[in-house]
Image (cartoon, rainbow, N blue to C red):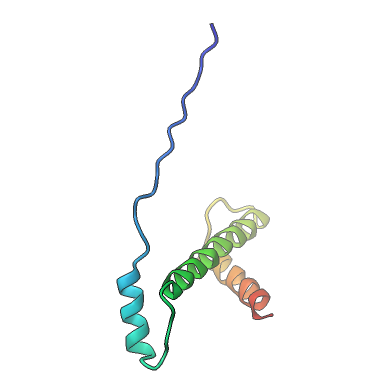
Length: 87
């Protein structure tokens, strides 16, 4: 008999902090008018940026043959990503 492995997947039940995002938008830009799902789009954009930053930082750490991602790796990755996203 072959051994079978069962992979259990966890579902993320935490939702986006919509109230916090709306409150920050109202404080910073009271004249700004967003549609109902505008805060979710901002949250998604932030998550994608952090994901790209983590990938680029990991690449920088591997290039410098370092196992741990240092502050310098993150700063170098941030420069590259912000330059790419500028357009």
